[in-house]
Image 1 (cartoon, rainbow, N blue to C red):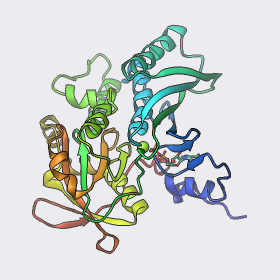
Image 2 (image 1 turned 180 degrees about the vertical axis):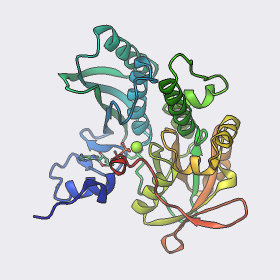
Image 3 (image 1 turned 135 degrees about the horizontal axis):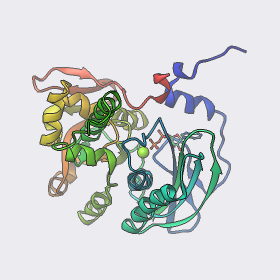
Length: 344
Ligand code: ADP
Ligand code: MG
């Protein structure tokens, strides 16, 4: 048997390979692997959506700069983001942790303070989990369960030609927040005693350390009478996510960089780091904003929703997947998202 390096497949290739023989046999399984959540049909009127995420110390978070309370909050927030990305409402979570001896009970209590804060804020019940020891560091796995009325859930696969591509909030800030934290960590490590310089970076740091799942956008869309044709949350970066929508909808897209919503502080810090701010917006990741498509007939409704920006449109598949820069030059959208296996 030949040996394949994980890095040759990447994360999505690995998932495809491992799950290629999985068959769905239960009538209640409406949608399995492949979207932000699975969808289960138990009753006549509701759909249940389920998602799970695993966060590993040293891969997804660094406790040198991520306070445990923030980590707890973020671990819940990123799961709820997947539930909202299905146009559903989160109801319960389970929390599993593996902890090494270096953690005190008080430290883990801080983690749970953040978890409970997020549960209270988003009206979600913590209903179970599992606890284990670990040889190295902390691992947190959260499963979130949500519900929606039958027919209300939104998949990645429903985008149609001419649909408007919309994004909530702004892009690229969380990535730059991480760059600031990494820079200060290195300075701190190399010259002990120098305290980190974090003033002036408040917005990008908050976006990195305390992402907010966009319940408000789901509520606003419902209030405006819009059901998106497709939706995904931005965890791996806009490029990667729009390619998921296009691939699963069998469509192409045009994105316009000059339309991208970018916070002023993000622009200033991108300059400071000498990186292109649009590259941060396209490939940065961890924005936890919603990327969705709406029928063009909903144009008037969608422009009335605060904090939503139209950044492009869906085309037919043959037109490909392109982003146009401010000069009107087209560049093919590449998935540069979170590729943990490629770092090794
Ligand atoms: P997200 O970024 O929204 O959390 P992922 O990119 O992690 O989604 O996963 C893509 C799809 O693959 C999801 O439907 C997820 O449930 C599924 N998936 C991921 N890892 C595994 C695995 N090890 N076994 C089975 N399904 C998986
Ligand atoms: Mg997702």
